[in-house]
Length: 115
Length: 114
Image (cartoon, rainbow over all chains, first blue to last red):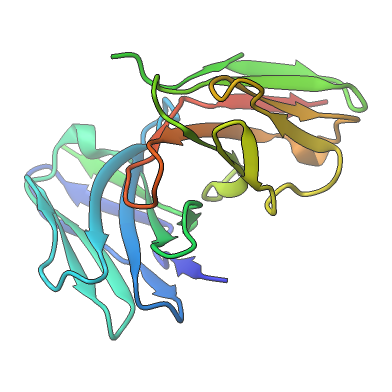
């Protein structure tokens, strides 16, 4: 089974600064998807960004970008120009492309944004 | 359009009771998923429906848990003889068929077993 590890239980960043959240995963598959989800106190999981493993180019979505290192099985999220509204739990998730539908989540990183 | 909705938002029940949690997926989404999120953890997969049938129920922890989706739309997660360890947030998600498609999550039901 694939495992997803987020080694940072909590992170803090000042408003307008940049922060990077770490994620590593373990898999023997070659084709898969990786995701970062945001979960505010409302509990609603919101997709922040996704990466297809076959794509070498790192995904970007406005202030959010990833550093995908397939050989190292690493998938970090960079948030630029942090805003107060970015404060939330962030979950890294893996999904197989071949047998996949279920998302495998890490334990999450709590991001605090200070003024 | 409307997103995934879940009812109730919160449910408190006594140990040993039976509970039902409901999920209304996005219209047209044939795939539906249930996850359980315990305190301080990421969501864990429970069951996946494609249409009316459970394509994968390998995540259900034991036979006290059961889910149905009789008409391929609304789904109900049923828990018999609840235990305190069942306390968690139960999340539902839906998507178009195929692993490439994004899963859209509902706000979850917080179940507390006293």
